[in-house]
Image 1 (tube, rainbow, N blue to C red):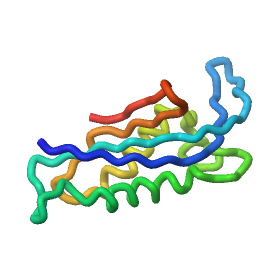
Image 2: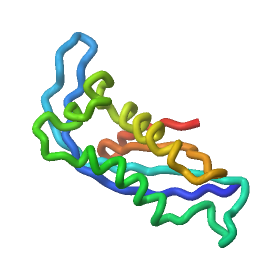
Image 3: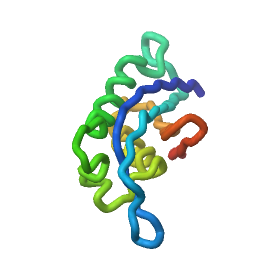
Length: 124
């Protein structure tokens, strides 16, 4: 099995909804996203897929997060009903990216780093 990974960054604000129904103060992070994809076979030019193409696909997804809107991630439909946690951001990226990958390329995991030492991973 061959595996490749790409990373990209985005800046976004979020405000988590807490268990008691309150919200934490809105705050901003410089997020890091790492994506791993794999394939049992390489393509005709010896690649799982092109790094630049994969990074562009991820960057297109996170571009909607990189938003100066004062509501931050809550301004995105998905996060109106799902808490904008690192875990749910990773799940959203995973579910959005997976169907877009070339035939034979499998999405292994999406890791989202909220700040150094604090990350969430969603994958198979």
